[in-house]
Length: 626
View 1: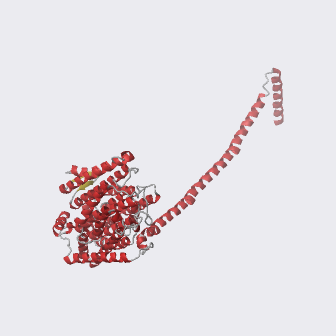
View 2 (view 1 turned 60 degrees about the vertical axis):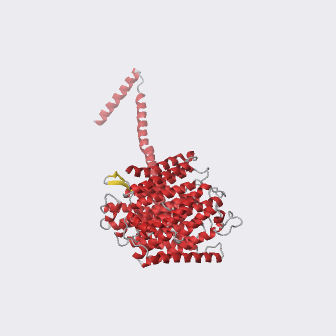
View 3 (view 1 turned 30 degrees about the horizontal axis):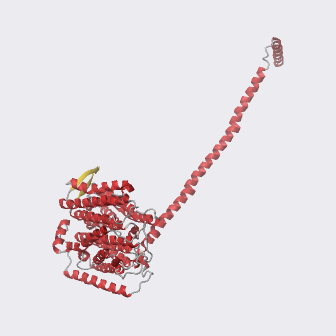
């Protein structure tokens, strides 16, 4: 059993490493090899979901690295592997031969492998390792076209924002150990002792909200849209952004162990679903609309986690993964064909490419929450859990569901307009790495339709029989189910909103000026982050650099100058004093020696004369002294 589990994570990680290191040298085989690896991984994921294997190995003293496929992770491994396979199959038609396919597919597989470790980890250290790898590979994928500065900057923004929130997991790990959870097992975190329990909860909540692009971290998801469309389809549907919601669903006992974490998470999710829904409705860029809708839809999952609706959040997660990956791939197909992602420029795109348009239409209607499609049933499950917690949560969630119909219909309305004279000319058409080819490979439609069918039918998980089975699988029996009147209210609200939005769009002239700049600008969250965090930090860094240059380095330089001056003075004293005195003594000794050598002539009569003079002087001295 453990061999199956290790194979499930080792296959994408190993193959991704080989392809990534191979780079352009494996361009010819990388697409097919990566898709084949993803398909085999999907087979292993299904087998693991049935067999439920587990494995542990020593990691640190008193801490083990644990992996296990239980009820929730069984759903997640299949979802992650299935979406990865569909996205990689589509991307074979997305990337040209001049791209570094080995690096792209290698990093995609590494990311998928990290996500599989994340959803199967049973201990916090292993979860942290996978979490870090997921963040690093997402940075590499978002900045795949790194030679374009704005794309590299977008990758940096996404990485730094999520990385700042990820520090919460390290805070949680340290607090758990301080609170007596030395094993760092995820299921033991709710038993952290004393006030450390609140610190653990706060760390987990911050990390999860940051990864799932909830308020106030949402703006990074807008910047992440600079990556290739397959990257958006994988990272922002079932994997990276879903990891935060998954973590909250996994650790819902931790949220209920405190009296504040659950309500905080629930209200954050509800407000994010409503506010980011309004942001999505204001967008004129299709990928930005889908990005904002991702944050909004994840808000429903976070709402479910905070409302103790684990099964409801899981259904929402799985259904949204299929819907959003299909929509992102459809947007990528139009970007490839037409070279634009601006909604006014995409008028007639669905009519010009009916196969892609059909998948987009089904996905958009599912995202709108129309019955009997999957997200209608999934949202009702979430709203039932919210209503059991608070009528206010239910009202905000219901309003967010209505807003989701607005932005979904807006996207559908634009792409189904009559064909313009030059659809590729568009407003503000954006060309990306030579795209706008006017051609899409036939096989690229297959993964689109597979995801579309899944998006439409996954709502069966919310039907009474399958819902009971899912609650049993997740160990979440006793969770509230929606009453018939709740399903009716949400259905009528969705249908009415769709009809009203379509009518209003058809009768309102389109203008280039944004109706709500604050919403189109993602609530100016990035600007606020720069004003409140980036600029003060950079200002402090510049001040510290100036202090270091002028004070610390200045003192060091002055000390060096003083030492140099002292050494010069010492040199002068040494040269002009000590050395001069020594030289004078030596010169005097030489003179004395010279004088002493003069009487030494070797002539005997001179010596006699010198002796006579000497005796005469001695005699004179004796006489004078006496």
